[in-house]
Length: 599
Image (cartoon, rainbow, N blue to C red; front, side, top):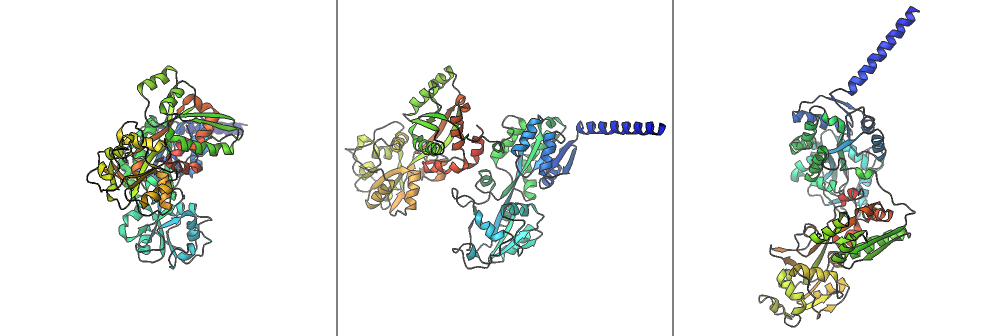
């Protein structure tokens, strides 16, 4: 009996000691870290490089277990080489765990070839399987694509234990890669082997590929026909146009940020001083935009989950019914008709009422509470803002791109390579119809050639944009132009007439280029800061002068309406991204769509 009592006493004592130990561990000032074995080394390296005094206890448990511990409140930080899943987020929410998401680096994989190779400059992601999959026996580049040279194909890869190999393995089908691949311990050895081997393709981290300089050629990847071939970079990864990559995340329980030294350590990890350590580990530093997002998340002044919030996403109900009412600027007309037409063709119970009678009328109706969404291409005036405020109307703004009007001229008329804003006004203004009929009347330095103009339909919004931007005020277009709504016809007409000039949208110009129209030139415009030729870049950054920035102003009270929420979700769907450019709108960042889906 006494023995039993002693044993019970010992058990009780041990239980108390164990319980005390658990409480002590949970209340410890030490920062506990669990998660990815891929992220652990760079976390430790950054901690050492920071010089910050902080007691850290780390354990490699795997990403899934790291998230389980974070969301159960038994660890302060989860490290991960993927974003948190919807189910894991629900677990955190259920346990009242508020976390902050930080992206510290990218593990970007680059494919390299000999510098004089001609067999492939850009690979489709579908071709990567044919090259690397474990079942592949493809021995010649022309078996990947008949257009490639008749060159023997060989593969050089890093060790199967490397993070670079892990990313590659996740991209191709099957477990591992082809059995005849040459594997080496150091990625610099991959570079050396590829540089001297015609037909070889190597797999390395982007920093190693970049450091190799001209000794190898970095191949582009075509992950999506919408974007075409894309070179590896942090910007391309964050815009989601280069996909052979893995993110390195830190998820921190916000309650743990009060632990001594932790916030200073994390500030170092997401700051510019960490760049050398990140690069030395074969990883790529995030862009400045991501650094800013990280800082805002850590300080709590911005979204604390800036990179993965789209994993918990709204889905359009299949029984959704109702109407969305649009008004405003005509620059959004083609896009709104295209995108709502695509939506309502899938869900006939949803309808769209689109009446674009100008920005002024659209803003008035929005501020009066009559519509859900107004298309605008200029900021609200003070009076309009006051009207909205008086009616308690609040809005959010959604960028849908920049609309540009571009000019296409006869190639032999060299003076058409660049026109000033004043010259454009003189060419197209109605007041010029009787006095300006020859190009030397536009400018005495121009050739003595007849002014031959080809325009689209009367009242074309693109002509309104051209005259507004070139003159600074609304003007009426001249009436002696040849009218044809077909941009391909107008381009061909300008090509066949010396002194011929027409205008069109950027999307229409791309069709002209695809049609291989000869004897034309794209006209640059000088608005006082030098001549700027239109391009996707100059239109996106608005250095090209003939551009309207088009936005949708959405009444916030309408965001709770299923038809409005469904329409905005449909707009932000990855598969509908090409609709922007097809409608003549340029500059929307593909990488911004996930955030838009969370509005």
